[in-house]
Amino acid sequence: MGLLKKLAGQSAIYGVSSILGKSINFLLVPLYTGYLPKEDLGSFTILYALIAFLNVVFTFGMETSFFRFSTGKGLPPEKVYRNTQSLVCLVALALGLILYLAAAPLADFFDFSGKAHLFQWAALILTIDALMAIPFAKLRLDGRAVTFATVKLANIFLNVGFNILFIVVAFHVVNGDILPDLQPWVNQWYRPNGGVDYIVLANVLANFLILPLVWKLVGTWKFELKASILAPMWQYALPLLFMGLAGVTNEVFSRGLFEYALPENNYPQLSAREAGGVFGANFKLAIIMSLIIQAFKYAGEPFFFQQSENKNNPQLFARVMHWFIIFCSALMVAVAVNLTLIGSLFFQADGYEIALPMVPILLMGYLLLGVYYNLSIWFKITDQTRYSFYITFAGAVVTVLIILTLVPVLGFIGGALSTLGCYLTMVILCYLTGQKYYPIPYQTGKGLSYLGTAFLFSYAGFWLDTGNVAVDFLLQNGVFLVFLILIFFMEKKELYSLFHSIRKRNHAN
Image (cartoon, rainbow, N blue to C red; front, side, top):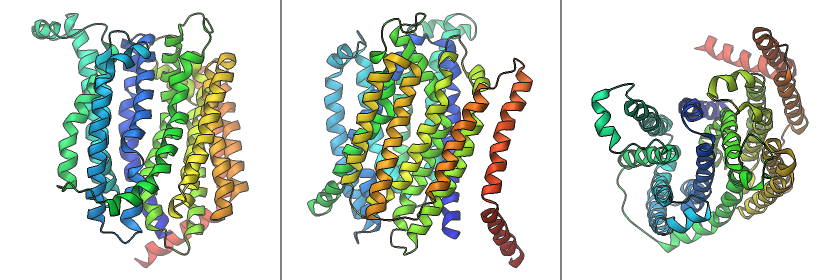
C-alpha cells in the first residue's frame, strides 16, 4: 500500500498541474470559438497535429531511454543525463533548421498559402520543446514533482496570457472598446484576420521565456557524446521512436486527416476545413481524460522503472491497473453525462454542438490509452521495446483505415471511432503479448466489466433529455451516482480493508 500511496501522491501533484493547466487551456475553447472563425480552428487543428507528430521525431524516444539507463544499468545518472541532453540538443537544432528552411513548400503542401511563417514558428516550438524534454525528464526522475508542475504551469500561464493579449485585448483596443491611448500602437502590428498566427506566436513566446528557467532549475551540464553510453541507449530508443510515430499517428491523425477524408458537402452548412475546426473543438472536450492519462504517465513511468527489481512487482502492477480503471471509468461517466451542459458553456458560437455525440467515444479511447500505458511496462522493463513498434504500428494502421472508411460515412463519429479502434487494438495486442512474456495477474474480467458498464452509462446519461435543464441535470448525475454505488458494492471488501488499515495507522500514531 505504501508504494501505491507514493504513486498516487506523485500522480496527484502531476495531476493538479495537468488539471489546472489543461483547465486554463480549456478556457481557450470559448475564446477561440467566440473570436475566431471555424476555418481558423480548422487550420489550428491541422498545424498542431503536425507539431505533435514531429515532436516525437525531435526527441526520438530518448526520454524513456534516459529513465531506463539512469535507473537499472549501473551507469552514473549525471553522465547519462549529460550525454542524452547533448545528443537531443544537437539533433533538435539540426531538425529545427531543416524545418525552418522548408517552411515555404510545407505551407503550399498543406494549403496555407502565404503562411510560411507559421511553419517557421512551428520549427521554433519544436526545437525549444526538445531542448526542454530531457531536463523535464530529469526533474521527474529526481522526484521533483512540485518543481516540474510549477514550471509547466508557468509555461501554460504565459501561453494563455499571450493568447488573451493577442486575440482578445488587441481586438478590443483596435475597435476602440478599451484603452484608447494604445490604439495607434496596436494598429501598427495587429491584423484582424491573424487568429491562427497569434495562437502559434503565443506558443513560441511562452516556450522561449520558460527555456532558461528550466535549464537553471536542472543545473548546468557539460556537452558530452560518448558512444559507449549513447549506442545502447539509441538501440533501446529506436523502437520507441517508431512506437512514438505510430502512437502520435493514432493520437493526431484523426484530427489532421479528418477534413481530407470528409466528402464535399457532407455537412452542407460547413466547409471541410470548418468541419475540421468543429471536430477539433469537440476533441478538446475529452481533454479531462487525456490530462489524467498524462498525469499518470508522468508519475508512472519513473515509478515503474524504480520498482522493476521488486520481486512483488507483478502484483503491484496489477493493483495499479485495477484502481486506474476504476478511477478513470468513474471520471468518464461524470464527464459524459454532463456533456450537453459543458458544451453550452464552452462553445460561444453556434454549430459546434453537432459533434457532441462523438465525445463519449473519445473519452473511452483515452481511457484505453491509459490502460495501454499500464500494460506497456512489460516490454520497457524487459528491454523488448521492439514490441512497442509492432503494437503501435498496428494501431496506426487501424487509425488510418477507420478514418478513410468511416469518416466518409459517419463523419464526426467515424473520426472518433478511429481513436477508439486504435487504442482498443493496442490494448488487446499488448495484453496478449505481455501475458506471454511477462505475466501479470490483472483482474481482467472485472476491468472489462467496468469499461463496458462505464461506456453504457455514459451514453445513457448523455442521451437523457426531458426538455427541462434542471431535471436533465439531476437525472444525468443520478446515472453517475448509480455508477459510483455499483463501484462501492463491487469493491467494498477492498475499500473496507483500506479504510481499516488507515484507521489502524492513525490510531497507532
